[in-house]
Structures are given as C-alpha cells and as structure tokens.
Length: 439
Image (tube, rainbow, N blue to C red):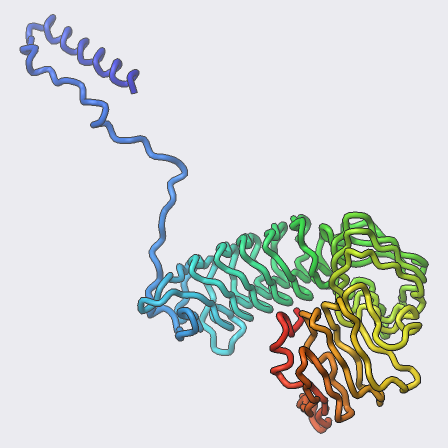
C-alpha cells in the first residue's frame, strides 16, 4: 500500500512540474492530497464464495414430521437446487423416500445435476435420489443416516463428500455410481450390503480406524476390490472377504490389528461349488467383533480360539460348523450366548451363566424340550426373535419377571404359500434391554 501511495505522489509531482514548464501553473493549493489509507477499497479474499438463493417452498411437496419438515417431492426441473433450511418456520430435517428420484412413474426430473442440502437435515431417506442425473453431492455434517438405495443408479454421480456425523449407510446406497474415491468418516458405525456395489471406477477408499461393522458385499464389483491381492481382503481394520481358491485354504489366520470380521466374510453358500475347507482359525488379540454369518456352513471348521477381547458376535456366525456342533446346551463365546444345542432333545431348562451380556438369536424351531430360560441381570443386549419357536409354553425369567411366549404370524409374500407361524416373546420383554434389535 505504501508503494501505491509513493507512485501516486510521484505522478502528481511530475504532472505538476510539466504544468509549470508549459506556463499553465496551477496554484499548489488545488493539487489533491492522496487519499488516506482507509479510503482505498479493501483487496478481496480469494476464492470468493457465492451464496446461492434457496428454492422457494413452492418448489417442493413436504410434510411435518417429529422435529421439523420432511421434503417428500421436488416438483420442478432445474439443474441446481438449494433446499431451504426452513419451511413455514420449521427446520427441514429429512429428505424423504423418492423425493428427488427419477425412478417414479410420471417423474418430470431430467436436468438435476446438483443439490445443496442444508445443515438442518439429519436423514436422507430410502431411494431419495435414485436414478437422478446428479454429478456431485455434499452430505453435510448434520446428516447421520443415508437410507437404502438413496443414490442408487446415479450413473453420473462422480463426486461424493460424506459428512462427519454419518453413522449408517444403507444397502445399495451408492450402487453403480461413477465415484472414483470415497472418504468414510470416523463417525461411521455400519455400512450395509451392496452400498458401493458396481461402482466400477472406485479405486481409493479411506477407512476410519475404529470401524468394525461391515457387510462383505459392500464393495463387490469395484476397482478397489479387483485390485486387492489374493487371500484375506481387509477394509481398514476389518477382515472383509477372501479372494482366490477357497478350497485350498486349509487354515485361516487373521492379521494382527484387525478389529472386526465382516458380515458373511467367509460364508459358504450352498449354491456354490467353491467352498472354504479350512479346519482352524487363528484370531488376533484385540479383535472385537465377529459379524453375522461370518463362518456360516464352514463344515470342516473344528478349532477356534477366541481372544478375550471379543465382545460382540453376530447371529449365525458359526452356524453349521463342526466346532458349534460339538457343544451341547448354551454355547458361549466369552460374554455372548451365541446358540443353544440339544441334539438328544433332553434339556428342558437352562440358566444362562452370570456375566453374560449378550444373547444371540437361538434357533429353537426344532421340536426341542426347552421350556424354561433364566437370564441373569448382567445381560444388557438381546437380539429380536431370539427365542422364537413353534412349540407353545416357553417361559423366560429376567429380573424376577416371567414372560411367556406368544404366537405371531409372518405373512407370506408368495401367492398360494402358507403364512409362517412363530412363537415370540412380547414387546415389553425386549424393552428391558438397551438394544433389542440388531443392525
């Protein structure tokens, strides 16, 4: 700034001198003084952020929900949309099912390339943007949940930023998008099956350090998975899947530092001819979680040593294994009662041992004699339908209260197929626990 003032002063001095030599000398008093520093315009900071105007509420259909407003439908067709933070004085907290989707009959959305989501939104609903021609999306830090198929088949979507509060990404949420990289925030707790399936250009994934809950099919048909070497594939600190010839894998060693094993990571499918044949598994100290169906139908598996660090075991993790079938009565992995076996149908009553904190789903559909279950106060988590069965009369005691099984019906979705009858404990039993429904 001083340099500018010096140059201006010199120019004025030269002009004044020239005027004197030409005989047109002006009185010195009319030569303007250089402006004070404060009078110069401030130099702008770059880059300049331009705040786009919010779309009016009339561009949307919406409804009131707990805590605010949910956008249920965008009814115009523009390239860029700025969702308002408020409608009728209420915060916009949710983007509802199919709100911006082109997969709805009669939709008029054909141009949509970008949507700005306000930081009042906490939920992006199922199919919210399905098949929309989006090119980029920034999910703000306020969002905690991305619903199933939320951005499925957004074939032009190449840039996705996931906010730092997202805990749950639903199944097929970004299936077949054009993204090449993704950063998963430290807040993430669960990613469901197929969330990034078919993202064929996805090569670079940043995984959070503490992440332990993952489905094995999340990254199928991605460049990232194709680029992994044969053997156990790791997604950060999770044993995610296996590549290569399963039949020659006679033993399995999970590397040190692994915190979780993905849902279905080493599952044997009855429809496949490529079976895991390993007989033993080595699990590292520090492992916390073994996912649902992780070793499902690994029939040859007889030897497993569980580190004390394992505190969470998903339903069916060892279903159909030789290891599980060698146990009778309640089967435990550390503090989790994972199953109940009664090969001779002679056990009518069980007392779950003190110190147990979790109870998994028990398959009591067979004609078992089990009629009474006593649960210690130490149990804090139980999976829904844990004790469902066909046989009437089962009673469960917890904290001096006795609960009786009740009949329920699962309606069939197949024409002319009979409904499934189940026996289930009443809702008030499950309400006694901190978490009665699994992910």
